[in-house]
Length: 385
Ligand SMILES: *[C@@H]1O[C@H](CO)[C@@H](O)[C@H](O)[C@H]1NC(C)=O
Ligand SMILES: *[C@@H]1O[C@H](CO)[C@@H](O)[C@H](O)[C@H]1NC(C)=O
Ligand SMILES: *[C@@H]1O[C@H](CO)[C@@H](O)[C@H](O)[C@H]1NC(C)=O
Ligand SMILES: *[C@@H]1O[C@H](CO)[C@@H](O)[C@H](O)[C@H]1NC(C)=O
Image: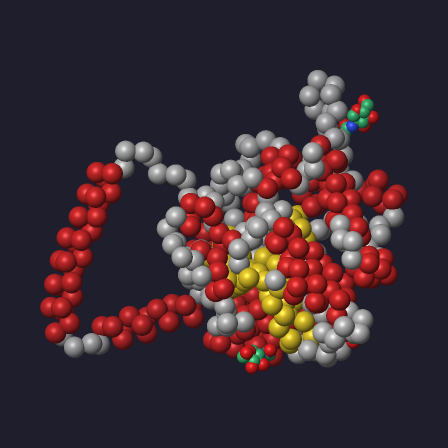
């Protein structure tokens, strides 16, 4: 059985979510000033409101009392854990999925193919939200154009909405252009919420439940392998003009060593909503590590690579100095850096970490090359390797 088919079940539980750092409980000064101006506005209203509020308060109290009694009288069964999309949807009748989208950006052919693979996964795994691809406006969708095949494939086969954008160039630095292009997701105000996913990754399960997080301009997991900064590999964004203006301002005043991750940490590091990194932001390098307490969020839980894979939804390729999976890495380097086998249990050698890790790369390369009979993809991906 493939490692990946087993990871498609929804029947997992949230476990051992990393506790928030105390530091992040502090709010940032801008947020506080917004709150206090809103509060003073409310307080300055006419005194008659006091009476209206008093009456409303009594009514609200009575209503809540009634509904509480109602809840207690019918709760013969314990409530289901609210841990998957199905249970969330029970409270959201008639969800309008056109308000939500997974967003990808492409600035070159390599990204285009990676993005297509992300969208193919979301499509295959049954995600219900829309899909949005931001691509350079110079690219043509005409049949004769060399890279139009993949764009049209995205549109036709995976219901991807194509949004032409202007790719910005900053001081001749290509990486800056990519960082900015990624953050154009903040400008996609035709959506209420978008999930921006890095494309050097693998979607193992849909993440549609993230569209129902409590309201917050930005939600991100922690880069758990670092020092608690936020990871921009997965960002849940509420697109808005205001937030996009903040992003643009930050770019105009950027430091040359800062990219999208530093920008979002600078703007939202103190007061964004934290998505548990466990399940939502696993990196392949974790399987090479000997220490797993940062990922597990626990020093007592035992690392079980099969269990971890089964619960994971988003897997990011990160094994420096081993290259990204679309670049052929040398086999000697692979043998050198691949995960070790454990001799822990009574002389029995356990190579699960090694097998799973190698399968990540094999499966990705396989899918990129031959999962699709489309010869254009096959030829193009061969060129890019
Ligand atoms: C294909 O993509 C490349 C980006 O590297 C671009 O330069 C070229 O204009 C694109 N071709 C077409 C026909 O869109
Ligand atoms: C942001 O979105 C608006 C409205 O769609 C558009 O006019 C503008 O060009 C976009 N800005 C950038 C930098 O793409
Ligand atoms: C730029 O770097 C300086 C010095 O390291 C720092 O104080 C400042 O906050 C940074 N600015 C941004 C926008 O990150
Ligand atoms: C496991 O045992 C074998 C043979 O005893 C040894 O060569 C190998 O280095 C051991 N591996 C680890 C990770 O301890």
